[in-house]
Length: 507
Image 1 (tube, rainbow, N blue to C red):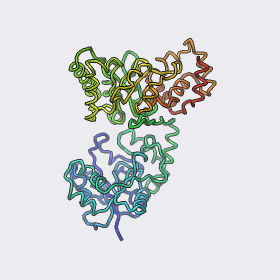
Image 2 (cartoon, rainbow, N blue to C red):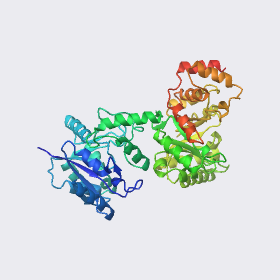
Image 3 (spheres, helix red, strand yellow):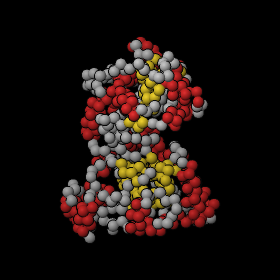
Image 4 (spheres, rainbow, N blue to C red):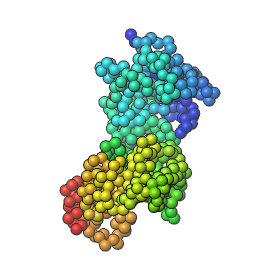
């Protein structure tokens, strides 16, 4: 009968959380917990670590507690897997797990293998686009592992073990029966210190940390998530996937900006609640630099940046190109990464500066992958009409709130064609929330009419009720404001009928 061996890769030199393999969860080092949970149903298990001197600590501990372990090259992880399965037959099977995913267990492995057997697949993996990170697993035959080892010398293939297999065998993308959905919120890997704290709490008071099933742990995680507040939904517009709220970066700079500890707390809360992007510009003082210096890398790495360029000066095409390049390169330097999710010109008139030289340069950045989307920040929604025939337009940023006229048809048409729309000034720069706005009473009456708790709730629900709007930019200067904004954006937006009711009341 063919054998199945679970190979768990692990090392101590994690860039984001060094030493995590030996950090204690449920009374034992993380790597031991992962190995014991994987072995629960009787599969062979071996931990594959590196030959680096510091990984001797992993080896020493596992040998002491009776968990099989082997060592190989730090960077050639594919080679490690081949060595870890050298005594197996070609018709035996390998399961790949990583040592930072303690929620995954033997039940998950068995589900994946059963699905592969039913479909006759040579390679299968848990689909981490639909399943929370932390429940990843891959399975394949020993013979194909050896083929990959003999065929590819590409460093990427050898570091990540399975790319060659996926390219040459196809793949089963598996979703387990008890998948909770909402992969961002149910994330259960141990990648950064905040993850460790969360997973340690998850296993807290569990009487049998080895025997408890992954689905039971996910149910418990759901309880923790519910106590933390709602999840910000993701709204997908063609190729650009963005959370319903985008963190506005303008408030990170200036006299009323938060202190660094508060910024870190706000970023952590935003990421934990499903926020995917932060919007920030070269004209926002030193907001970009603050994001880099105050935000822990493990947090900011999980956020995409919507970057507004510095307004460009008039000039010929070469001047415009250099101006766009200088602004974007400065943003790369300040943010500490060489990629932004979107780069936006600061105004419709900027598109034509230098005969379109700046726009052309941004398209070149997009072609290299350094910019994900190219767009324009509008001063008013009506300006969208001037962009209706603009080639290469992916993204629009515009002001919009509950007191504004209905979105013009040009915006609706562009959104329908796949352009992502980000709305800002949802609170009218804060004026709608002061209580002394000329329309305050009317706004409160409209909020009551559609069952909203106040003007802020109405303002958010109204704008997000427009399908053309992918996301709204909301800033905060305190963690409590951030928490409130996240709560509002996690609620159901207004329906078409409710939007119409509000419009009629506010005419």
